[in-house]
Image 1 (tube, rainbow, N blue to C red):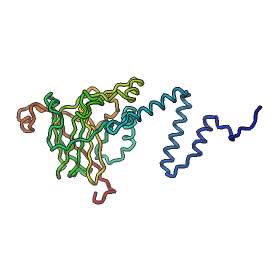
Image 2 (image 1 turned 120 degrees about the vertical axis):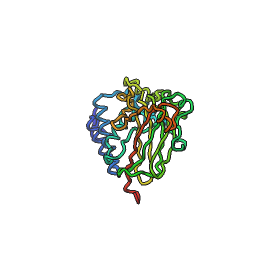
Image 3 (image 1 turned 180 degrees about the vertical axis):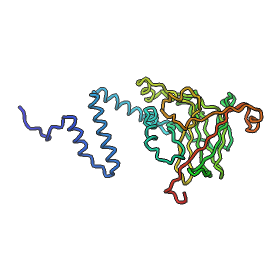
Image 4 (image 1 turned 45 degrees about the vertical axis):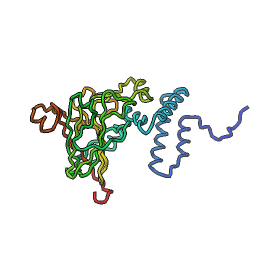
Length: 296
């Protein structure tokens, strides 16, 4: 026996299902409506294109749930997924609306923790790391786009090391520096080495499932904030690192790779107060004024 369906028209067709979902969305905010409708359309198209099975869909939902459970205040597994899928770098590229003179943005640190305040010129690595050599002196200025010094800028530094994993993050070199009125900054460290992202969670599963490596080239994460300016998050990569072309987070771009010039003469070593031959690294960090801030 057959009859008319009690629930109205047949919406079993894929296109009809998508149309019905979209027809019931009425976000009060126009931008929210644009993003959510586009998300539904692309998600439905993905499901149809790949003829996703229930087992595959449940596996994907379980994976996303585990990504959420692994995310803590000290470790953002969602951000790791964003980085290792290239999404963070893509969003940086899409939002590169700053003037040409502004500093280049880099992929943020999903494992970031608060940095201890340090004096200008301090050694930011541990005594054990400093004793290993490969010393480096990093210096420069925080400037605005008019090449004027930015006073009292706060520079939050984080440098990974080759043995990084999710258990020893508190021992990574960190420092919080504040510039004077001349905008100059200066700190001593060791040449950054390539390191592995943590692979003990869902992000590690993602990398292994896609045949990817988890290593990033050596870099120093730098966050700069100053009143009246937009904050800048960038990374300082060491030229010559063999992994510059194979960054697991796709974050290496022209302008973020710095020369580590070797200084060897006794006069240079003594003048900069270094224990021996060292790498001299010069860079300026350029902030964009925030025109919404009075007096910027």
